Length: 95
Image (cartoon, rainbow, N blue to C red; front, top):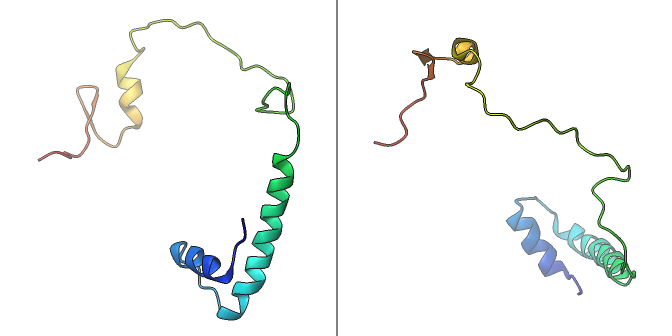
């Protein structure tokens, strides 16, 4: 996939990045180089490789899923900007 100056101009306009006309061609060359690297990565054989989320094999600590009564409602709503009768008060959004 070849990227030309017109494509760079269009992407810069869509991203609202001010790009001088004399920078369009060098940027197109840089982006073409990046696309070449991506194409090289696509050629790597990854069959049999498990997807990674981290290079360290670590599990997340799990807690028992227990239903509670919510503890102390007054304490829960104490940080709210506004609460009435232990309920959060929010601005009306539907008219």
